[in-house]
Amino acid sequence: MGGARFADKLAAAVARNDSLVCVGLDPDPAQVPDAVRARPDWLTYFAAGIVEATADIVCCYKPNAAFYEALGEAGQVALRATVRAVPDDVPTLLDAKRGDVGVSARAYASAVFDDLGADAVTVSPYLGFDTLEPFLAYRDRGVFVLCKTSNPGSAEFQDQLIAADGAWRPLYEHVAQAAVRANQHGNVGLVVGATHPEAFRNVRAVAPDLPLLVPGVGAQGGDLAMAVGEGQDGHGAGVLISSSRAILYASRGADWQQAARAAAQDLRVAINGLRRTRAG
Amino acid sequence: MGGARFADKLAAAVARNDSLVCVGLDPDPAQVPDAVRARPDWLTYFAAGIVEATADIVCCYKPNAAFYEALGEAGQVALRATVRAVPDDVPTLLDAKRGDVGVSARAYASAVFDDLGADAVTVSPYLGFDTLEPFLAYRDRGVFVLCKTSNPGSAEFQDQLIAADGAWRPLYEHVAQAAVRANQHGNVGLVVGATHPEAFRNVRAVAPDLPLLVPGVGAQGGDLAMAVGEGQDGHGAGVLISSSRAILYASRGADWQQAARAAAQDLRVAINGLRRTRAG
Image 1 (tube, rainbow over the protein chains, first blue to last red):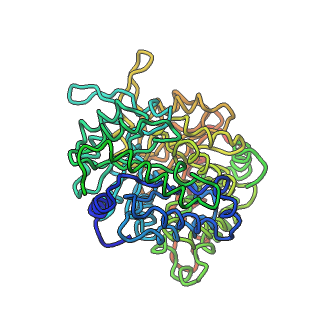
Image 2: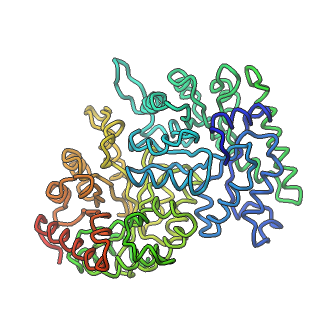
Image 3: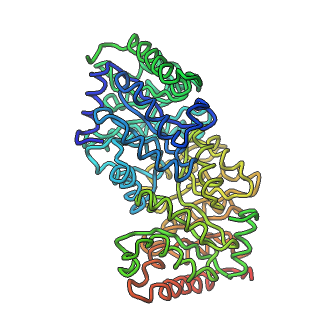
C-alpha cells in the first residue's frame, strides 16, 4: 500500500509497465512446484517469487482471500507478507467478495484497508449499496462491485429482468447503474466475467468510465479479444485482465519464475495487440 | 464442531436448552469491559466468558468473521480458540457471508468447515446457486443463504420484482425458492432480517421448512413478536433469533458475565412466550 489514490496508482502502473495484466494470487498447495512446496515458508516464498518475476510487466496483484483462508493461520500470516512483498507502486486488490450490514461492513472495510493495507477490494452488491458505504468511504482505495460473474450459473439471478424507467434491464445492469451513482470519489469499479460478451457491451453502455476487473480468461474459457475490445475505455485502458493459474503454475520445475514471467508477458502482448490506443 | 449433522445438533440444542437464542459473537474492542480489554488475551477470554455464561440457555453461537478479521492475526487466532471454546453439543455458525466461483468457493468452504471447524456458515446468493454447491456438498454442515437482509437498503435489489411462472415475486423470494430446491441434504437455511414483516410471511410461504436465521432484533429495531410469530415452524422451532450487542455488552462492569446471561435469559423467555408449542 502507499499514500496514492488507488485510481492514480493503477493508472501509473498501467502506463509505466504498458500492461493491463492483473495477476491473481491463488496459492494452491497441490499446484505449486514440489521444490517450493517443500519449504516451510512456501506460501510467502511462492507469492513473493511470482511478484519478483512479474512486477515490471503487470498493473495489479489480486490476492484471493479464499486460498489464504483455506490455509489457516499460516495463510493469514502469508497474506500479510504477500501484500507487503508487492512494490509500493503496484496496487494490490484483495479478492474477498465481502458484504455485510452496518457495523460488520465497517469491520470488513477496516480489516481489508486498515489492517491488511490492500489498495482495493471486491465486494458483493446483494445487500444493497447502503452496505457498501463503509468501503466507499475510503476515498483512496478501490471498491470493485460484483456485477456479472464468470460462472455458468451467474444468469440465475444476475440476468433476471427488472423494470425501471420504462425499460427492462437485467439485474447486473441495475448494479452497474448503482455503481455509477456511488462513484462520487472516483473509487468504484465493476467485476465482469470474460465469459459473457453481451454483458460487456451492456455494462459499458451504462458505465462507460468505471474500471472493469475481468476474470474468466484462460481456465474458464473467456474471450480475451472480446473482453479487451468491449471493455477498454477510450484510452485503451479501464480494464484489468485477471489471470491466475495460467501464470502461477506455468511450470512446476525449477524455472517456475521464468515460466510465470513468460506467461504474463504473453498475456500482456496479446492484450496490447487488442488495445485501441496505448497509455504509455 | 462434532460428528453430528448440523440440523440434528441444532434441534438437540433447541430442545435441551428450550431456546431459540443465537448469540452473535462480535468482539468490539471499544465495547468490551475495560477490565477485560486490559488482558493481553482479551479477545479469546471475552468470547469464552460469554460462552461459559450462556451455553445452557442458547441454541447456537454465531461468530462474526468481520470483527475477528478487523483484529488481524490476533483475531484469527481468537476465532479458532472461540470455536473450540463452544461446547460440542452447541453448534457454531460462522457469519461470513462468503460467495465466490469454482475453486475459490471450494477454498472458502474448506476454510470454514475443514480448517476452522464451524458447523454452519452464511453465504451470499448473488453469484447463483451453482457457486454454493461446494458448501452444500458438506452434508453434515449448515449453509444459511442471505435472502432478505436487515439493513434499510436491502430493498434496492432484494425487493425488485421478477416474473416467473406467471407471477411477479421479489428477488428474495426467488432466492428462497432456489434454496428449497438446493436443500437436497437437509442442510440449507435462510437469513431473513426481523425488520421486514412482509418478507417473513412471503419467505415462509415458499420455504415452510427451512430454518431461518434472524438478525435485526434489538439494535436494528426488528420486531421480535413478528419474527417468532411468522418465522416459527409448526413445531415452534425453525427460527434462530440472533442477538449480539444486547447480550455481549449488557454490562461493562465486573458483572459482565452475569449481565450477559441475564440478557440472554430475558430474550429466551420473551421468545418462548411467543412460540406456538415447545420442543422440550
